[in-house]
Image 1 (cartoon, rainbow, N blue to C red):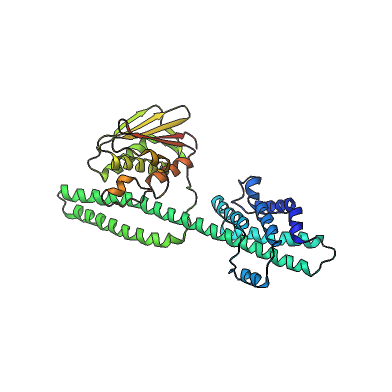
Image 2: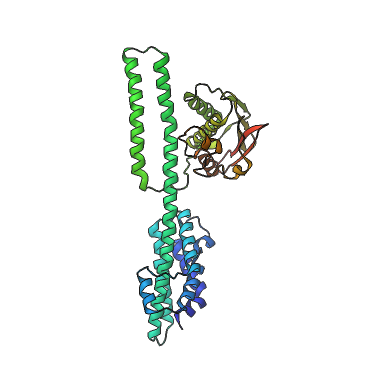
Length: 375
C-alpha cells in the first residue's frame, strides 16, 4: 500500500500513538484532556497525505528540501501553525513540541514498513515526500511557537517595567517631599540622600534587568494564595498610590467579612492599578471611591471615579495589553504602556474571579471585581 493511502486508512491508529506520546510530556501534559493531547495531529497527517499525491518535479523537490520552494500546502501550514500556538499556550517548550513531530515521523514509517510485503522504488519516493511534508509542518509550528514566545516575552518585559516603576516612583517622590518640607540635618539628611541615590541606582538596575530577561519567557501569571484580609491590602494600596499623588484622598467603604484566600502580592497589584487608573483618569483626585463588600462566598471590590467616560467601542478591548485610552494618546506625553488594566484582568483570572466595567458621563466609571474567597 502506498504511504498516502496508508496514512489516510490508519490515521486514527497513528493519532492514538501521538496522544500516548504527548501524554508523557510532563508537567505540561498532566492536566490536558484527550482532545488537547491529540490537537491538530489528524489534520497534519491528512494534509500531508494529500500533499504527497500532488505531482512534484525534481527541481521543485530540491527547492522544497532547501526550504526555498514557493509552493506550500495551506491546510498543512495552518494546522502546523495552530499546533505550535496551542502547544506554547499550554506550556510545552520548543524541544518538547519538536519531539512530537520526531515521534510522529518515526511512528508512521515504522507502522507503514511493518505493513509492506513487497516494497518497490515508488515507496522510497513516498517516504521522501512524507518527510518533506512533516518538515514543512514542523517549520510552520516552530515559526508560530516562536512568534507566540516573542509576544509573551514582550508582555512579560512590559509588565515587569510597569510594576517596578510604581514603587520606585513612590520612593523617589516621598524622598523629594521629605527633603523639601522638612529641615533635615546630620544623619537624617544623609539617610534621605542615600534613599534618593538608591532609588536612582535601582532605576538603572531595572533597565539592566530588563536587558537580562529579554530572552526569558513570560508564562501564565503564577499565584501563591494564602489567608488574608482584603481590607488591609486596600489601605496599603491607597497609601502607596497617594505617596506619588499628594492630592489624592480616596473614600473607602467596607461592609461585611473581607477575608479570604488570595495572593496578597497579586491582589495588591490589582488594587494599585485600579486605584492608579481612577486617579489618572478621574476629574478630581479626591473623588475616588473604593468599596469592599463581603458576600457569602466572595468579596466584591468596586473602584469608582468621575471623569471622561470610556467610549463604548473601547470597553471590549480595555483589558487588552498595550492598549491606551484615547485621552492618553491626545494628552501630554505619558510613560504608560497601557498594561495596568491588562494586569488587573490577569490577576482576576488567576483567582477565578470576574471583572466588569461600566462608564458614562452621568454615573462615572465603575470597575467591579468579584473574587471567590477560595481560589
